[in-house]
Length: 383
Image 1: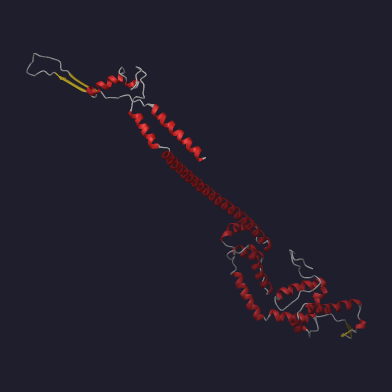
Image 2 (image 1 turned 120 degrees about the horizontal axis):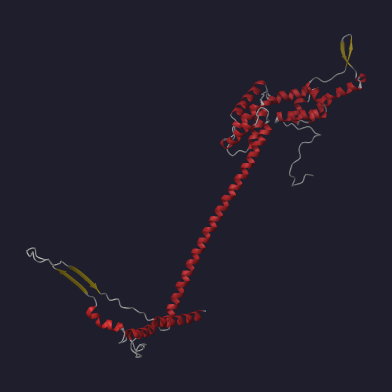
């Protein structure tokens, strides 16, 4: 019993003749000839010729021998025709057997089948012309593999050979190479220059083309895989950029939310009072102590003994001063006795007030400490 997962199906039996159903006569004819020769070459010989009949020659007249007079060798040769008729009859369906049932020799059976299925000479000639035209117009079709091309081409050539058409080896090889499309032209050129097409068989040529086709398939697969990897990498990069952008916006939103919450917290803690205290501290000078004279109400830079204080007092008088002095002593042309020297003097003096600006860090430090304490209290309540 044949298994369900059998890789290859069974072929025809070597002990039974191939069955002929009325179709594919040329195919059956070749297989039948092989089977008859396998059984005995004498059987195929009797199919092509008349059956052997033992005879007696008397007075130059041939008379059939009676079966009792047959020798062992004559009996063996006479059996060839009987075996051939038995084999041919066993290889036919009922409809085909009815056509040769009245035949008395294997040669007669074979001829009836040949004439019936090979048709007349006119029909054979028409089929031959049609196949020749198909052979001349043979081209590799779009999307067709070398295996498909080999199958179609071999089928056409075999049919023409069965109808009496003969081909040279180089003629068949050149036809195969010319039938390939443009993608195969580099390989066609290589084979034409490196191989002897007159001695190269058609099977060997198709083998080389099939090898090249497999190599092209491998390269195409590697290229497709590389393209897929590039697409996947680009997709991952885009996803990573989108994820970073989303994280950035999330962090921005979280920061804005925290600032809003901290603002509300500061308002709830009395930020107006904090600002008013700040203004009061800025407006009054009783909190400051002079490190120069030891008195309160001012700082050292604004003390009575500092240079800055003197500059402030006199700034209203000479804040910006410009002096222009021009002396021009020219002698009159009418006074020939005077030879005074001509002098020209120009002086510009600009005094700009660049007062020293010292920033008191005590106020900023107080503001920073207050904000820091408020922020720490805000974080403690938030956690």
